[in-house]
Image (cartoon, rainbow, N blue to C red):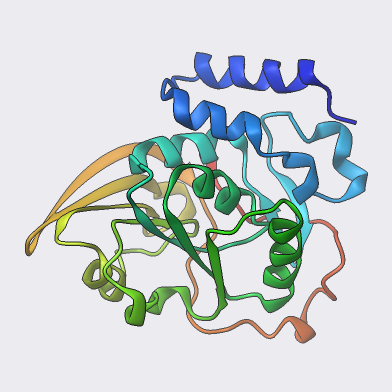
Length: 231
């Protein structure tokens, strides 16, 4: 089982990796990562590694979660859209920092599991939806911040349109292939979009539509390969 020492060790590793935002580090430390992973991997919950959660997906490496969250520059005033709920871990970290989080997942089985965990942890500022993340959540736009946890070749126009023109920020991995992906920060000012390349990463592709989980993994906790990792 995770210990206080393992939490402290991870936070120190994140600091050494260049994560300096105290609010992000506090959120990482506050969220019980072990709740979002299968019991088989409990002893690795606070290691800086990705871990499988089933349906070919993983809970992202804490360093990637921290890096993306720090780049998003979230405050308590912000409404945030997350594309790719996954295990719910990144959502929990963001919910500690923002006013309200809206999160979309294309795998209904994963979303149901994440909803159960987030509810049990007492989060009241998270709104979930099963659907096509590439389409965003237009009826609730604009969003102050958008975080995308899978990689398209270029940013979906729907997400750009839903980003607040008053300095909205989107953090998104992009690339033609897995080996050419980089994490980008896109800032919108009026109708202009400024792009900043942050780091080389590796994510699964961002896919359209709602997944049919009945045709793949049965939803049990098992091996997978989703989630971001630095290259």
